[in-house]
Amino acid sequence: MKLCLKSQDLWSVIEERVPVEEDQLTEPQRNILKNKKQKDRKALFQIYQALEISVYERISKAMSAQRAWEILQTTYSGQDQVKKVTIGDAKSYKIEGVGEISFKTKSGKIDKISEVFYVPGLQSNLLSVGHLLRKGFDIHFADKYCTMKKKNHMKELVSKNIVQGHPNIDGISEVCEECQLGKQHRESFPSKSKWESHSPMELVHTDLCGPMCVPSLRASCAIYLINRSSTKRLQNSTPNEAWYEKKPNVTHLKTFGCLAYSHIPDALRTKLDDKSEKYIFIGHSERSKAYKLYNPKTKKKL
Image 1 (cartoon, rainbow, N blue to C red):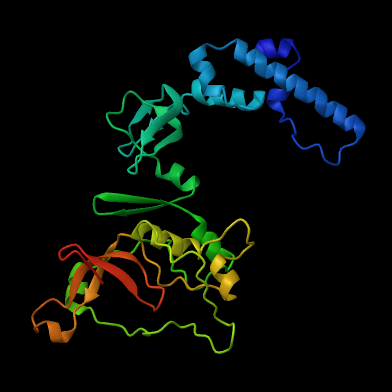
Image 2 (tube, one colour; image 1 turned 90 degrees about the horizontal axis):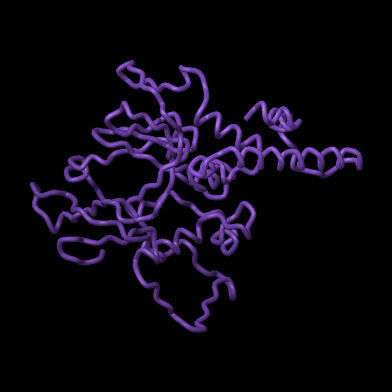
């Protein structure tokens, strides 16, 4: 294949990347760029012609001859040390190929992982931690489990100072159940909202077609978070800040459906009873700095 491309004076587009931008180019430079793009299309066509259908599928999404050649090189070429993978016990296994696999997530969504090594010598599937870190994942190992979280827009909210009070999510903290049951105490929180009107038109309520109820508690929590997240229409701001003209504080945000512990007042328990009870977090209160909780035993909301 390499000899074929060289014989037709097309190998240069494999070695040199063809620029895409045409801004600020002179007319002679535009003509040179046009000629390079024509060569790139011819080289890509020649590569397609030389491949079987099963191999063509691997490079069908390549937009340039150089990218198609890189995929073929990664999959079928390389030195012996490149074609082997070394695992924790220092044993090396031969890589027979590189491809893409599809899998179903816990939510039922079909997702894909690219650049997967096919190693027949291994008896189980291995996931490269280094590869996941390069892809932007946060990884945490504890007990028998490995937790992976995609670095989402929340870090962008903190870096651009769009919200205040966001916790450090570089590490994942564990909750000590024994500590919660034996030491939990109740913190004070205001019974009324922090924001109150002090002049006419400072706080306005309208009722055009409501009140409208969201279909579920999960949707209600999602709307609460959306109003405190960045949007495309607002540059470095959130809907909450646009409305209240103050950056929202997110120190109180919790994961929907997570385990929560509610303090039991002294009057409702004996000295040896647990000081808290297990609940499920289902949302945030709009009226005060409090949480909405659900008791799975009594099936009641708090």
